[in-house]
Length: 139
Image 1 (cartoon, rainbow, N blue to C red):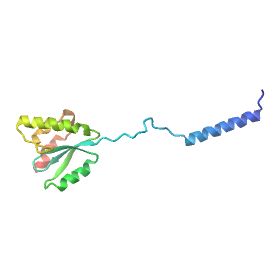
Image 2 (cartoon, rainbow, N blue to C red):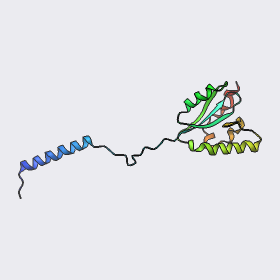
Image 3 (cartoon, helix red, strand yellow):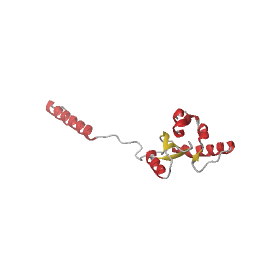
Image 4 (cartoon, helix red, strand yellow):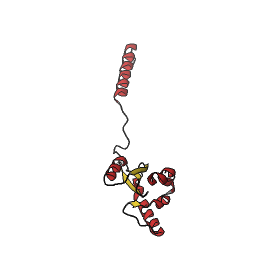
């Protein structure tokens, strides 16, 4: 069977037009269409009263700071935020409570005495501006 040149040209034009339409309206589909819930951030806040610090989790640490500040007569500052690390909060609390108890310090809820900052996990402690956290609250 013989195909005429005009038929070949027509088929090519139709194929090119289809390809252009495909490119215009195609999109990549996410291989995992179920959106992953974002993990909360781990934050560390410090009190201006005595340098005690709080380890907590929040999707919005600045908003959490405002909540805490409303109930506190002392200035509170965020000294660290680690994104998607909320899963570390409870193990850190347990560790700090054990460390505090062994050193003779009493913890109050999620607030820990200043001297326990050095008991934070190394990777977190190394993120802290130790010169700042050692002095800002003493003024």
